Structures are given as structure tokens and as C-alpha cells.
Amino acid sequence: MIVSLFSRDWLVRYRDQCIILVSFFLSLLIGAILITLYGANPIEAYAQMVSGALGDTDAILATLARAVPLVLSTMSISIAFYGGMWNIGAEGQLYLGAFTAALIGIELGALPGLLLIPLGLLAGVGAATFWAWMPAKLSLDRDLNIVVLTIMLNSIAILFTTFMATGPYAGVRTSSGSTDKIAEAMRLTHFQLFGTLNTGAYIAIAAILIVTVLMIFSVWGYDWRCSRMNTRFARYGGIDVRKRQMSAMLLSGALAGLAGSLLVMGDHYRFLINISPGYTWTGMILAMMVTYSPVGGIIAALVYSVMSSGALQMEIITDIPQELVSVIVCCAVLFVTAGISIANRLANRIRED
Image (cartoon, rainbow, N blue to C red; front, side):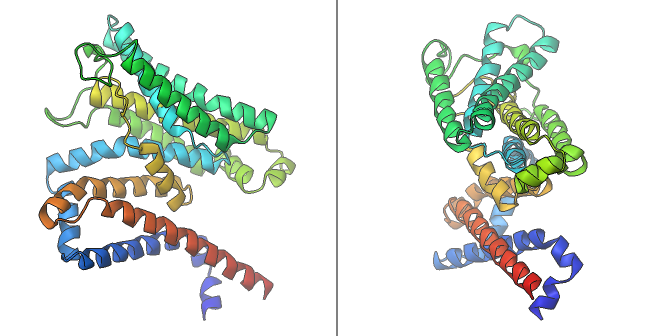
């Protein structure tokens, strides 16, 4: 019976998606059990979570504002891993992009907004892309370990920007640990007076759509997938593996830099030494959970944003700690990993039979 089910075309085609969906519901079930053990009603707790994130217009806009950098970070990790490049340094690229954008807004603040906004975005994206290019170049040309390189450059970027924000560019009119505010002409417009969602969301959506189309519908996406799955086969097929893997890494850095630039230009209006609460690390978990699928990554990031935005109201009303969200996500990753491993073994057994 199991063999006949797994031999169906539709199940083979959508195997990973089914595993991800089942894993998510299993993780919610684990969360419900933990809530019950805590002495609360899981249905009420989840209802409060959803209400806190989507209960009214203000809540929805706040959730979307939280989702923008997370979706960009998830896509940044996804495209690198999709192309066979292990970019563990996206957090440092985000920080460097954010600081560079802030630097433009401080030093060139006299320029008009029509020049300052694109210049800030290009500078932030360019700095992050360069920071991603260095480990990719050393890995592809010198065969050095890209995981070690990106982790090392991660630390360098974060420490460097922290030094600059607490030293030469420490804010005079702001709290410690941040630069001065960028010029008003560079600040992106908010959709509501006291909200954080801003017109940078349009830029993020455009970037996400472009990358998604490239990954799913273009020859580049096919080449990235082949380069990741079987380098030798890709070379025999005429694919320039080095060029494709380098492009995946550069796009990954660009998306991380864009996320950092938008945080400066649309959210905080200055660089903060803790500007990211770990967006790219969370994005890495989400990207792995959906096996680097671009559409899956977008959905996962949006769902996580809903859960994390509503977690505060859940904690206030039901006294359930916000950390439950992290437990649920980590359980989902564990179930997905185990599910895909089991499915691969079953598929191999079916082929042998």
C-alpha cells in the first residue's frame, strides 16, 4: 500500500511540499501539547497569536513591516543554497549594507531625495555584494572552505560596523550604539503615522519577484539547481558552474544588503549596532525548512512573521512565553529533515524493487 502511494506521479512531484505541510502541522501539534502542559488552552493561545498579528489594520501593517526584512533574508539564503553556495555570512552582509546606506545618508545628506535614495540603496547593496564576492572568489578559485570564510567575514563586518557606530560615526543626538540620523530626503515614507511599514516594501516586493522568477522560470534557475545537485553532471551539460555559483552568491549578498539598507532608510533612519535581531539566521532556518524553495521561503517567512508578531499578545493574554514560536519552527525543521530522509530511503527501496 505504501509503495503504491509513493509511486503515484502527483505524490512524487509534490513530495517535498507534502512533507513540509505535514511537518508544520506536527510542529503546531507539539506546540499545542506544550501549551496544554503549561496549563493553558492551545486553541485560545493560537487564536490570540493570530489576533495579535492580523486582528486589525494596524496589526496587519506591523506584521508586514516585520516580514519585509525577514522575507529578503530568507530569499538571500535560499538563492545561495539553491546554487550550491553556503552563504553563512549573510548577517554580516546585512550589517555592512545597512551601515553603508547610513553613511551615504549622513555624508551626502545635502543631495536631493531623487539622487540620495537610489544612491543609498546602490551603496548598501554594492557593499554587501562585495562582501559576498570575497569568500565566493576564494572558495571557487582557491578551493577554500566557504563556510569558514563566510563565518569569519561575518564577524569582521559586525565588529567593524559596531566600531564605526560607537567610534568615528557615533551619534551625537541619538542614543549610544547608533549613528546620527540620515537626511530627511533619504527617509522612505511610512504608510501610517506611528507604524513602521514604508514604501521600501515596494522595492522589496520587486526584488523578491525578480529573484523568484529567476529561480523558477529561467535557465539560470535550472543551472543553479544542477550546479548544486551534481557539479560534474552540470559541467558535462555545458553549464559554467563557477559563473553560476558566483552569480548565486552575489545575488544572495545583494538581497542581504537590500534588507539592511531598507532597515536604515525605512525603519530606524540610522544605523544601530543591533539593527538585526537575527533576520538572516532565522531566514536560514526557514530556507532549510522549505528546502530552498523560493515560494516556500516567502510563505514560511510570512507565517513566521505572523507567529512572532502575535506572540506578544499571546503571552500577555495566556501567559505563554513568546519563545514557543522558536520551538515550533525548530520542530518543523526537524520533522522536514527527518521526513525527506525517510522519503529518500523509501524511494531508493522502491527503485531497487
